[in-house]
Image (tube, rainbow, N blue to C red; front, side):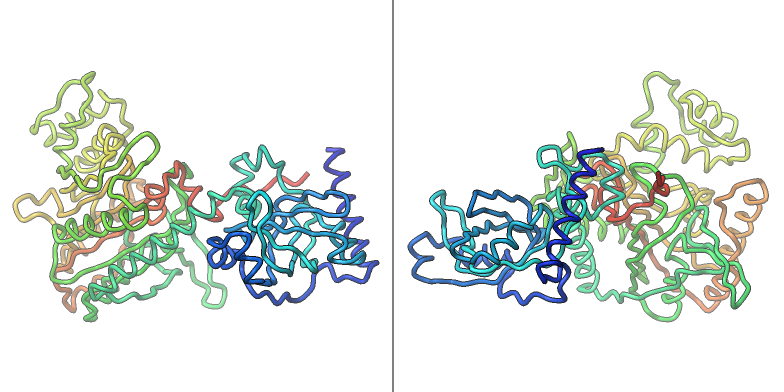
Length: 499
């Protein structure tokens, strides 16, 4: 702690010296001629003699990442966050006053340098400085070079420092941006229209989740942060926009884990005159294309696994339960799935948690989550879900207890959820009423009644398929990131304790 205090004092002293010598430690602007990346791109191919002949002079700026003073000269490495270049300063070249400025530089300071580009005897591309400029003082020392910023919570809380000292972090968010751009291109090319819908809603609808609540003072009404994009997008299908999507933030008042953050990014898209099987094929095409464009291959490393996007699996929910049922528990049969009592016995045999109010559909979903999810490493589509846990999905014609719904799993995580949309207003109203009854029995995630949505359906919604894809989890898969907080720039954390 004493050493840290001394470093802070030294930097404050240098800040005062800058002001005493007449320098503005935080100037308004620096006119640069090249970025570091441009210098690398344009001049990397030239050798020492070619650079001497070209006499390329640059004005470049960046953060000091290493500083090596050597008497009346010194070297610096400066970075623009993505690229680095070496800078060489000599007292007899820049003059005594400018060299004095150089001697006030610290690691982490942002500086400007101008001069010709050359190669050193070790062949390092370098700017031979004729003048240096101070652009911003770094008062807090960067983490120590060899150990870096390794504390996980500090990395997430101080993402600005994480980006400075851990170069791999930037690449994750560059890939995330590319994923979103490629998704937009994919959907735009197929005639989808991107829209924006309300974040503040009077009813938390479109999913089974606990919402965040807030209050609008002027209107004196309670509002919710949206838990899904679904119901507004389907209103647009009713209005005649037959292919529509939104990429935006969703908020759910739930737990935090390596796979969950209360604020996350969701893609939802809807396609009229289609059913869930059309979206199975579309999803497989989209995600396989993304894997190849983001990673350069259809075989993608994720932790100790190689994910093969050339080989997708498809199972019904019941098939997945049978396939992954543990040998240590009594094997179920089809008839067991028809009895609430037997489903509870099966759940108890594999130590799955359930509520006494859970019906057969919810118990079946619990069995699947317990025995199958962790095994779904390779790209897998699980289809045909219980109607009880799918209040907005169309029932299967030959089995009214099951709906036309699928979820997409990769690396043991649910990545997408899709279904043939329920478009019968009378049945939709009845489903909402079932959810209200579930809420009355204590289910905090049950859906509320949305009378306006029922009214919208009453104007006629064509057969429609819709899907939601979690962008954060998809980014985890395609960047080999183990935690969702690795792919969110500023994940939610408890407030920092102030000493």
